[in-house]
Image 1 (cartoon, helix red, strand yellow):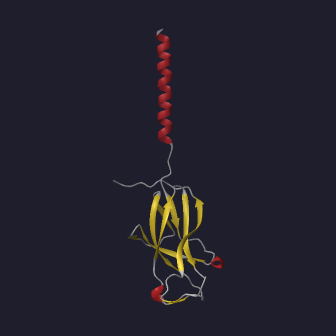
Image 2 (cartoon, helix red, strand yellow):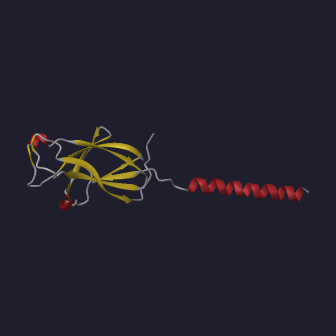
Image 3 (cartoon, helix red, strand yellow):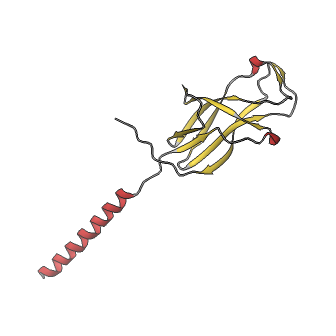
Amino acid sequence: MRNNLFNITSASLLVMLMAGCSSTDVAVPTCGTISAYLPTDKASNIYPAVITHLDGKPVISMPNFVVPPGKHTLTMAALIDSPKLKVKLAARTEKTLEVNVVAEQQYHVAAQFNTDKVYYGMDSHYWQPVIWQQDELQCKPITTPY
């Protein structure tokens, strides 16, 4: 009787140890990437844009921003160099875009030049920020020093 009890206890202990090890060794992706560096498709009226603020905080222009999953607000400036653009420089204002970032995804942002009509003067509706491409991208987890 004692041998059977020992074997059951040993088997249970082994299963518990194996389960504990496997759950702590698995890395869970904890980040996504917002990018503004890919060459854009000017034939489709997609132009480069610069991210100036991320979640309301000013940032230095970078090709990639690694962020935790969730909603993020980008403030962007369009870099449209089309001869069709007739608005004044003062109309070329920044706009915001909300991105719902999913782990292990890369979001390419740009400026969509609206060519449905000719925009003149102070009309700032000539462009809108867009996600023009999305890819899978393996991301290293973000570590926050405490």
